[in-house]
Image (cartoon, rainbow, N blue to C red; front, side, top):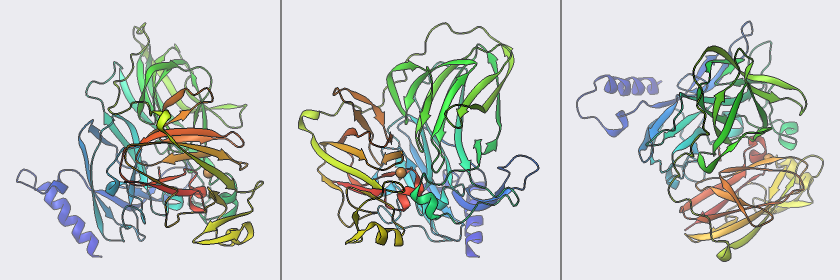
Length: 458
Ligand code: C2O
Ligand code: CU
């Protein structure tokens, strides 16, 4: 295959170093490739995955705030693919959405991603071509943008939470990925839960140590309910964006698919147990991350300072806002009468026959015209009215938004928000990033079966 030669040549260029080289040699290529990874516990077979660079998660990409991410995607898979940089307020041409912002990259070809990162924080990247299958097979990784002045912590740890639906006898992913039951219900939920690509993830820490924990939910559909064990903590950022004031963690941390939370925690346990617990059914808690205590150091006795604010995060001026309504409907147990699909109005039966179970504002899947045409700088508020029987993690590309609470107060900046059945919520944002931006459910089976729309900012 010619791609092998190309890639070798490219790597050769890297080894040649020192002499002037094209910008694309400045960083390693990001290679989408097959690999075999031990996701299941020891004793079970390894899993054939699709990966970035042969590992799950893919390589950690880390850049300073205000810098650039410069990566050549090399597609060594047998299917077209593209990379989306989730949560980055990015140049639209680099957003990675096949069919909207770029053509999918065919097997054997490359695409050069090169973009500025205005905001510090915890982000991630994942495939955005047939993502329901490609992300489930392993195409995701962590992207961290570092503050110029990092917070006062002893260590900074990334915890990428994921789940995989595997056949325990073969280690392979259960197919098909387009199972109607998954699409019409809660999405594809795994039977094996892990962190950073490992089942039963373990860490070490000392009593009194202060850690920054960057939690990322990379699962296709699972909503994680988490509790701290043997540590006290503060939430310092959500979806990459710092909170004005760190918020003491009490009770459950809920992390919908694609959401992130940055915690600063102090280890209080003296000999264990410590770690992160997850709720399996709302009642029983199980260890997700196990921290073993290896020593003691004097604890800090003050709450952490807020992270430095990112630029351009003023509250949207709601007095000028354009109000839009988005009814979310469909799925098992609620259904819908009809929706538009590829220009035709179809009843629920006919939609299901075309693999469409959901609709946003009366439209199943992408339409020629956007859900909203916004002029640059316009303030918009969107009411998300979940008339389905399921929760949905709704994600907007390119811009962060805030929840407008019932009393008019505005919540923290987010790029993904959990919408609960029969509990309408409203989000508001300033449409200050030009381009075509997706707004979709991050339960990826839902996104693939109707819950995807887009807005245009010009
Ligand atoms: Cu995390 Cu449309 O993506
Ligand atoms: Cu959904």
